[in-house]
Image (cartoon, rainbow, N blue to C red):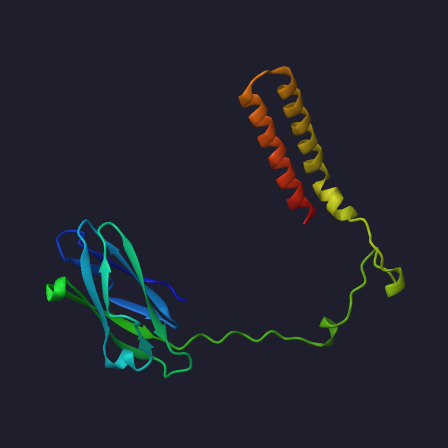
Length: 193
């Protein structure tokens, strides 16, 4: 989903509408309705040009005080582009009306990635087995070199926590030691992944 279109209601006065003058997208988007201090009904309507390629599942929405409501605008894939039209925003059953000029632009084409036959070839790295029969488990020495200092510091922290827990007769020290142990277990798990 593209960037969202912010709409602020009831900011300065009841039924007040603040939004952008224009909005451009290439895909479906959300209208983020931020409401101030009074509950309000808001009506969202796409003009004929936008309705040809986009839709809003429901037009009328209740937005409670001091809350935000997300309203999705679904844009059809593969439809005509660019399309320009108006999104109409109405509050207070017609008390206030504002318009946003919406442009649904052509999506930018992504550059193709060149792929040749060398992608399928296996590159030889030091420590690789020559054939599948010899391809057993290898101890991850590179990972051990990278994570060894972290493991040593973890063991040191565990020793300090265990020593503190054995010397002090406090629940807080014991709970802190458990927290250190839990952190070390989580860190070990992340290092092993």
